Image 1: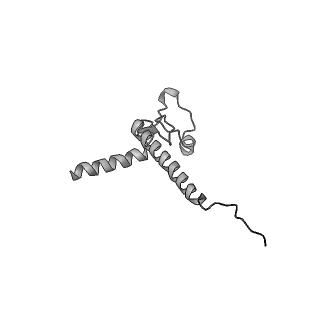
Image 2 (image 1 turned 60 degrees about the vertical axis):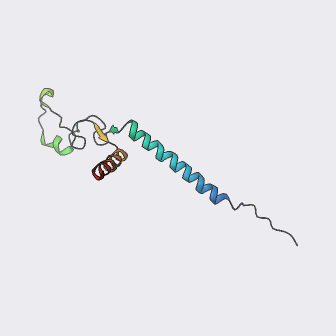
Image 3 (image 1 turned 90 degrees about the horizontal axis):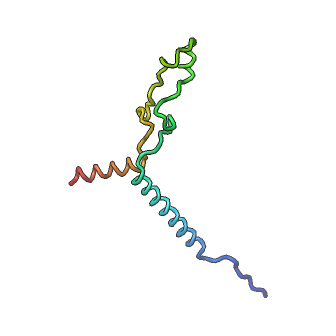
Amino acid sequence: MTRIVAATSTNVPVMSAILFAGIALFVTVGYAAACWLKPFTACHRCKGTGTRAPSLIDRLRRRIPRPRALRGRPDCGHCRGTGLRLRIGRRVFNHFRRIRRAAG
């Protein structure tokens, strides 16, 4: 009779769960620190410029090019022309802070 020895350990899933929890905690604390240190980030829609590029319809409407001095670029509607937006984590933090102030 030959013995069959298992080559796997039973504590591998537990170590994987601990490792995953540690990485998730590290990422969460890092994002919280980023929201605290730098609450604003560049707007995704205008890429931080504050103005939006003219759409295809806008370009097709104007067949005669206007002089550069008369071409105003409208502000980005997402960031209202600032080029910055508040991070989602900071919005959540501000929301809970307002709730706590209103309760006390």
